[in-house]
Image (cartoon, rainbow, N blue to C red; front, side, top):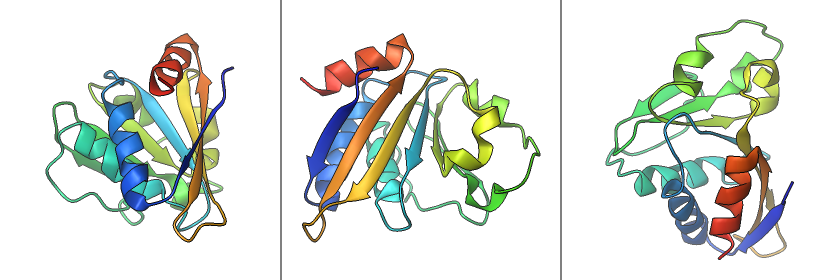
Length: 152
C-alpha cells in the first residue's frame, strides 16, 4: 500500500486537493474520511463536490445520515456517526455500487458494510492554525493508481 501524506495550511488548500481527487474518481468509488470533529472532513467533501460540478452547498448530513448532490456524477455524502453500535444496513449498496461517488465520514461505525476497495483518508490537525495533514491510504490497485496520480 502506497501511503501518501499531503500537508495543507488553509481550508482552501484542503478543497483544492479534494478537487484534484474528484477528477480521478469513477462511478462506484468510495472514499472514507476519518478525523476528529472539526478536522476538515466536510471541507474536504465540499472540495470533492466542486470537482464533480456540484452547485449546491455541501454540509454535514449528521441528522439525515445521507445527502445526495447532483453534479457531473452524483455525490453521496454519508455521515455514519449516528450509526455507532447499529448493525442495520440502511441500503449502503445502492450508494457504494451506484452511479456516483460515495464519501463516508466516520467509516468505522459501518466498517462491515464498506466495499473491499476504497480510498481511506485520515485528516489530522497540525501545529499551524488551519494546518492539516491529509493521509491517503489506498485499498486496491485502482486507488494505488489514484494516489500516484495525485502525487504528481
